Length: 294
Image (cartoon, rainbow, N blue to C red; front, side, top):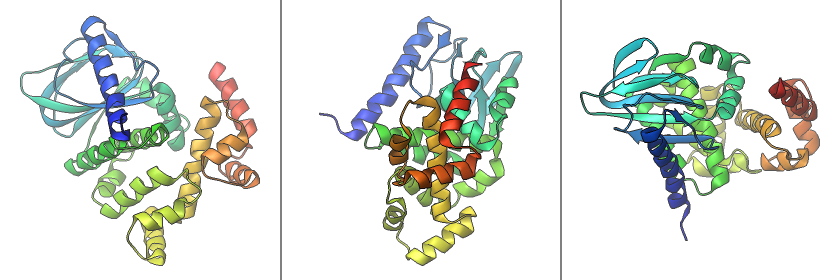
């Protein structure tokens, strides 16, 4: 019987092996229905290919030449690129290079983009690819988050962290200055890791207090100073956004969704949801299903 860590390594390894196998024989890559995968790559990527998912990679060591559309550019540590679905590209290697390759399903990435702006996904994909830069500290922060992802205990936990990692990558691109500061802050790292692990649990706040070794009142005050909102408000916002995602990709009942995000009262859930999205959950589901069919 495999433990949680072994299962998660198998999950990631499956995606990496799948992409490598497909890459040898085909030019179009896919995630085989999985929402997220991440690998540290050092070869087997010098073939022209495109894919049906969002790819976001950044260089962690060495140099490489990235060829995309009519552009050819040398990239080094800290350079990254977001590539939209259907855009052909390949790498040329003359030196050793390692890059973190992240593959995100269109559904998950659209959902993450919608948290920031209703038209962000379309704007990014219209550009075909977006180049960005991240710092050494941001790389370390992300690698630490990936390790946490690999150490998740079960499939439900992995789903939460897939979402967190996708949002983190999007933040590196959309808000580089904010994440530059965040990556250097151990307190923020602790808080984000604890929230990612626990925000769907009814006792999320108490688990935060247990996880972070600070006085409760001091932790609450420092959290508000750093994140700009009280801890409860921050966690509830994540819960409601996760509920919106579940409304669009599952047929779960409202009580089921309410329970799955750690809220025990359906009327309270409806109140929070309507406050955030201006419409009730059922109406939101109907509107987004219609939109998806257009």
